[in-house]
Length: 392
Image 1 (spheres, rainbow, N blue to C red):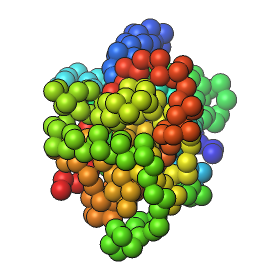
Image 2 (cartoon, rainbow, N blue to C red):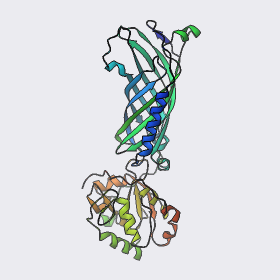
Image 3 (cartoon, rainbow, N blue to C red):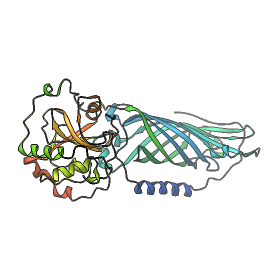
Image 4 (tube, rainbow, N blue to C red):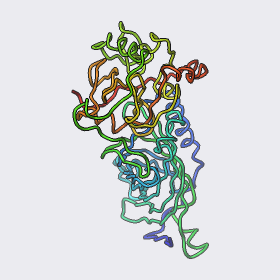
């Protein structure tokens, strides 16, 4: 894109200082991200709204800006591509300065965004950190209280990282801004913008529904009565014993982080407890449990009682697990359902889970030999979050 610098009135030159404080700000945010327990990968929402604060070293005076960006994702290439539109304004504008020559910085950007962690296969591998890369064009400038100032077309590129926590995501990014100038040295000398880095910190929240990546298999929604849905393999003796054990804890309350009937169960704590009583030792959290046993297609056909089903509430990583009970029913500990209960996958509530089914594993019988002791020994400190299914 070709642009130019437009100077409405000469602006007093201000030296650009190294953004040491900005880098420290980003480092502090990364430290906070490391300290936070992630509740899974980023939601597959179609839109993300992100308020932020930034330090912009490409504008004279290195102003601190506050603003917001809106990102929208499509479904191409697994839903990892998006467009982002944002803007920010100088925080000094809200301080009430009355100086005639007070300067106010501002920016407006349009970016193409790539977020590889939104792809279901990649997200679980990154431990809750969600990187993005972006590039785009925009306009930035300075405005003085006496009406003078100027602006410049800029190109920019950069990288960001976010980490989810409690339904939100904390974010930080670094962006390199490059003004587009015409007129050679004279234009450069009078320009109010220069090459420089902008550092941002902020947070975001997703909304607008889940994107459905093209080319990924869809999960069939069962219809009709449970007895008519499909013919299934009769449960083995070990599966019958497992389901009998699970039935003994129906009604046990849900407890985040719970692993016993006395304390209550979360989803993976219940699964680990029931299987341990039947001679199969599983890891603690659903993300690690999804690596145990033998892999099955992530669909309802071909399942038998005692198989494990894994769900992704966010579309980016496993964060809920249930025991398949046969006849399109699951047995699990669910926060939205009040504790250990059965859910019919053909019901409106059950469809919420089938829409989010991402993996299935068999860990009983001959498949028990596929439960890797090395996986079981891992201590995964990331507990599964409460599910957000519709309440029964």
